[in-house]
Amino acid sequence: MIRAMRARFWILSAAAMAAIIAFAPLAGRDSPGPTTASAGPSAAVAGVRSPTRPHRSPQRLANEFVRHLETTHVQAPSGWAWRSVIQAPHLQTDRDVGASGIGVALLQHYQRTRDRAALTAARRAGDWLLSVAERDSGGLRWPDFVDSRTRRSDSHFTSFDDGTPGIADFLWQLGQATRDARYRRAAVSGMDWIVSQAEPAPGATPGEPSVRWRYYDDADDYRTGMGEGSAGIINSLVTFAARTGDERYLHTAIAGAVHLEHRMTPDGAMPEHAGRSGTNTGFLSGAAGDAYMFLALYRHTSDRRWLTDATRLLDWVHRHRRRDGSWPIEPGPVDTDAHAATGMEEGAAGIGWVELQAWRVTGDRSHLARARQAADWLYRVGMRRNGGIAWPEYIGSDIVHTSLNNGAAGIGWFFLDMDKASPSLRYRAAARGAIRWIESVSRSDGRGGRLVPANRTAGRPRLVGEPSWHWGGAGVAAFLDRAAGGVADTPGMPPALPTG
Image (cartoon, rainbow, N blue to C red; front, top):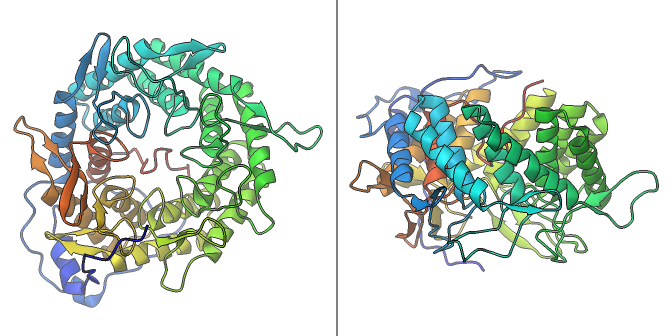
């Protein structure tokens, strides 16, 4: 539903950007990829004196957000959980809203700082997840939430964002960081359950296995995307094939990729749901996320078939780019959503980030050029707020998110990556502006920690203190750790793909 525009959008002037560039320096700088071409600062920006530094550096802010996560857990019998605000009052297990996503943020903080308290908190999250896992079909699965010994969800998701693959990925990372084999064993058992849930897909070519997964339990709901469907499951199987050398995971991943390949239309579109014709351009549920999966499979197998599929999908997305530089979430004529979204999961930041991955994998400069187009549009539509920069969820919306999912943290992360790939004062200023705006709408929790609203709607804070990766403090902390020099590059949860 289109909301009336209530916020005035500011096209950021050179002087305004110079005021933001002066922020405390972002730590660290990766080596550039195949090219170091720069969009370059304007003379006006370069010639303006830097104003006063902000109150808090990214390092300090990250420390405070992590401190809040460490002190607001719920003590469960076997570990720690966190009470959701956006899905109150539940103790969620999953990657986007639950303990596994918060655990990933704690691990990434530990990787940057070697702060043992963060590692201990991540272990407590892992211990709780081990305690609530369920045996099924020769593996482990997780209920959506577990509020007590007698109250747990009866839904078990197969998707990366909502279910077992995302939890398994966290547990594997935790096992690597702690050298505790319990976590790795549970992770592998989770992926064994995912293999057991693969169903033969209808219309398969004889002699070429093709599989798909129900979104949850017995639901007649088959999705294709990265966050909620087959693409995210396949990507996880490829990841675990590389980690373990288990060929079952790769064979199942390829069978899933064959099914998605057969679902693509002749012009390169991917239906968002089985049996429907609606399409989506974004990372969470659309062609950009599907393309990422095919790129990862190509990177693992060197089979150019999968690169061809990724290229077809990204070309389809590019053809739907509008003259103003934006993309519709769902191009017509069926299930149309014409909104021009900005964020990682549905909008330009996620599309641009996947184009950046395609450039990293292939060295094809056309993908870097497309990533720049996404970044340049986001730069133009940024709004000056409280000395920083914020973005509406979509153009015309009065919802302005702090989060990785649809807001400043995810968009700022994309700008960090763009500045590393194609150094530009504009990109660096936009990332710093995102940090400054997040700081401006955050507040102290009175215990040495810091929290933010998940969004501001019509200027009012909503869902204050949400702890999750996608919507709350964990994702914001991960973005700040990246800005402070952290090596993890995961704005959409799957990591950046290796170069070359």
